[in-house]
Length: 466
Image 1 (cartoon, rainbow, N blue to C red):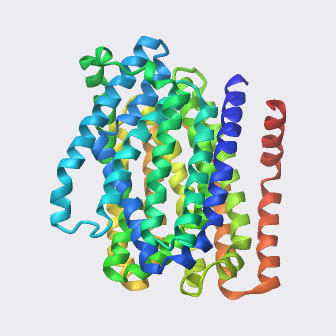
Image 2: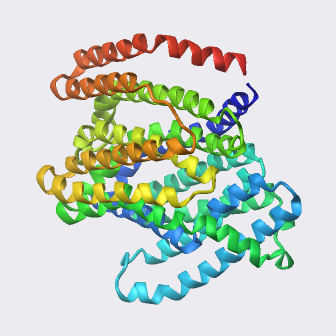
């Protein structure tokens, strides 16, 4: 039971670090939609999406190697070499980014806000290494605190820059840059990283091993971006920047679900690495996944109850239709989480090529779906395409990882949960007000009743390991 206890305890710590920050991010949405136009909000979303693409390219995804090797190599000298190698990669990457700046400016890449994009990319590059190293050496509490600190800095600066100084998109991006700097300084201090970095600790052979692990994750990140991030550019191409702003706002409610998935994935990654050589890891994977998807569907069902009212009364007029997108994006977030869960299997056994292979096919589905569905259904086609891509990726990984862990799935239960979710989505389009809330709540009650045995077992597990 020790492994379940550790997973639960790490999840609780990460929950403390993420709940406050994520909730504040959602609360800030009305502020953003009031002080930023749909076009400006769309631009911000494009910047953050582009960074998610360029970050693994620039860093060679070395941050992923940092956490994996730091967990498996606990000796201080080993961790010193791991951290020093990663920082060296980040320094070289930063110099390359700076050298490319004039070229990007010449081609009007992010015209007018390129400097913000460049600085944010560099600071997040170092931040990724520092945060992964923090987790890898077991400082999960410090990692969690960093999440709260970063969000409070962003929120506070946004209030000042947007409301008091009226800086618009410049103020929003500037607050993100300052928050990234504060985060890096905090992590550097709490991990005492100055003790781990040394030019003498640079190890060429270890660096080769780390890059052999991380480099296959680069194309995987690109493919993941094609599934998740390129949708914004297809919307921009076929519909326009304003529609991209609506898509970005619609993503905010599914981002609440990401609170749960981020919390869990951070804890699960550590448990998967530590339990990789366990004889009963198949049972461990199966039991944890069953509890995981039940919690996700229950949480998503609750979000659907408040979705329409929340969006209608908290955002400005130009964004009100975004509630129609939310169910598709919620379902996409669920299956993205499922894919991520199985993706950890590949990194745990250090078969990172498998992550890339399965993601390629998902990316192909995403691109084809966007080309077909967005011209037909507009921004709503993007939501459907996003779901289809993640669902297909999960199916592929489920089949492929059976040779690695042999996870067992209750397909009947999953079918029922998806069915109730779809019924809630249909109800949302035909009813309003108190009738809508009652109907959605009844669906949630049905789901709880159907899952009652498993819910009780989850509660007993948590209480037993409290």
